[in-house]
Length: 427
Image 1 (cartoon, rainbow, N blue to C red):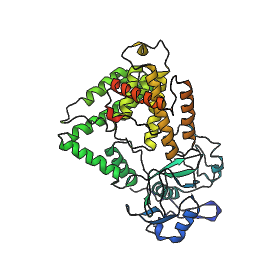
Image 2: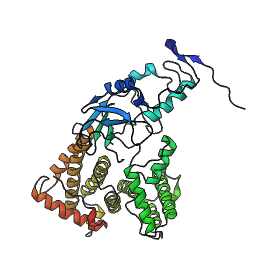
Image 3: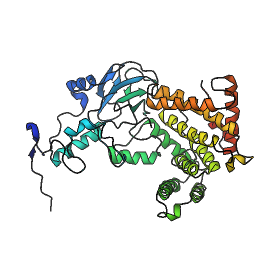
Image 4: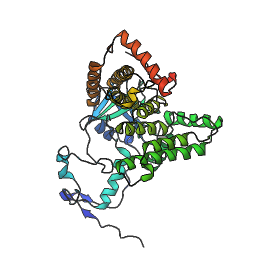
């Protein structure tokens, strides 16, 4: 028996809340010139923008009317509303959201503002879901733009050169996700099959690997096991004595090695997700338990041996995480057992590589996020502190460039990372 249809209810202020769904007469935003004009008036743009029919989808697209150089801010905008995902955010800053309470439909336990029927909510949520941008905190056909949050303000910057008339695009998801996982989420949550440059490149690489003799079904099964292993290991550390089979990091690393040495018919693709991320997760967990040697080897393999050699926001985040472990290892107590091992990299090499990576991360962060971004400023502050404490040649000198190159080569050889993955200094 079908549930009773909710009765219509009038909203406060005389706004009629009719639960009957009435499709919009518009097929897309660009068919309404006045709406497009209103939208563009609400953003602060450094370049002329236009809303037109998208070249890559059935809807509307945002286009640049003139050339945009890499690293340039395209526009900034204040959000129309704030929605906190309780599944992601464990805490909420109520002071920052204090002005929204008057308009809230409901609080945690009671109504705090204007009442609204269930029908209005279910009509509004899908519209927001498909038409709003998820702000990415500075935590393709390929994407040419990157959106980040600076104090409840959305800013979009160019990742590469945009020609006049090009459509401005951003990633819907974390591009570090494995391609099959990205496709499933996009189909489930956004109802389209992505054919961007990144996905096409990943698919081609996957097909080439299969042509070389790789078993795709076994690879997918192995990737699923890696994800499960990482989730269970993290849960075991957070909740001891519950997931007893996953408590030991040594056991987790052994299991990861077993999975990745499984016969696939071709060499295991070390650079494909989720293996790189799994190695980094293990590295941070090992560092917390003073397993210095394993942590350093895992972070270098997880961060350097991957497909993301082109620079951008993800690269900056990865360098940031790598440097955190390098600095922690390089500044470990002198009585640390790993530092006493003659085969372990010298402390001076570790600190030189950390400063070199951090300097490159600062340069790329300035281009990608902007020098005024809090994330960029924090990287620069860490860089200044690290270089002040570093003995020997300082970054910015020819002596340091030579020291960095030699130190990185020795560190990568120790970790088993091929020399082709070395980070080049640009400054």
